Image 1 (cartoon, one colour):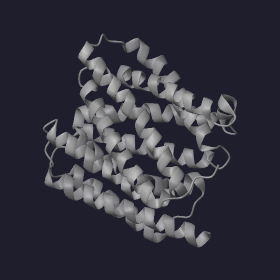
Image 2 (tube, rainbow, N blue to C red):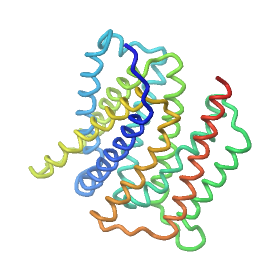
Image 3 (tube, rainbow, N blue to C red):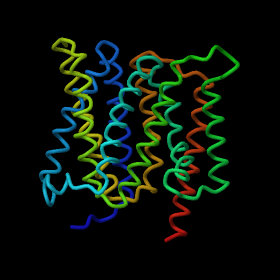
Length: 293
């Protein structure tokens, strides 16, 4: 059954997705500030894997169709990479805070554009290369090299952005032959296996009130991915992807109001440059796609 395209609904769903992802990041920062990151991410993945398996079981073809992939090695690599990227990013939330971590992480669409040539063989024109360069000027504004002692913690969200960009490129590559549900299934199940293999050795007792927070984290993880899937079902990705940047706004608001973080002037300016450059690359990608079609 085909889904009726509705760009306005897709935009609303993407905004809701960004909001839930931001809440999820706030919960992750709270829990990882007290407990081991490996354990927190492992518990989150257990619930996520159950959610993915339940979705796959209810889909046409069931679990057998969800498991069937043309790229088993790449699917496993994707799942492993995303699980480790989440661990790195949550570590960044604790070490650097939500505001600065997300300001730096916002550079990942620029990394996707820069790597799409060598990885996917896509042509990146001079306009997008210029936007990529300007975007990384924005990252330098955030980091302020030469103005103050460089914080090693700032490298954490930058590493997470690189990992997520590679994950995104691998996702685009496998989507040429694998359905989105297949990729979703492998993402959840491989991540759960990997995180269990690591996280079970870092188990810590959790107080009852924090189990409640953990339950909320698991629910937001499932809800955010469900909303994201629905958003891509009802609207073109190129039309709604720019609204994903609102996660930076929502996460920063949570960091400032709940965790007492401060929005430094250089971070605000640098993040603005990065976001504008990212939006331009997304627009150019949409223009190129339309001209090719």
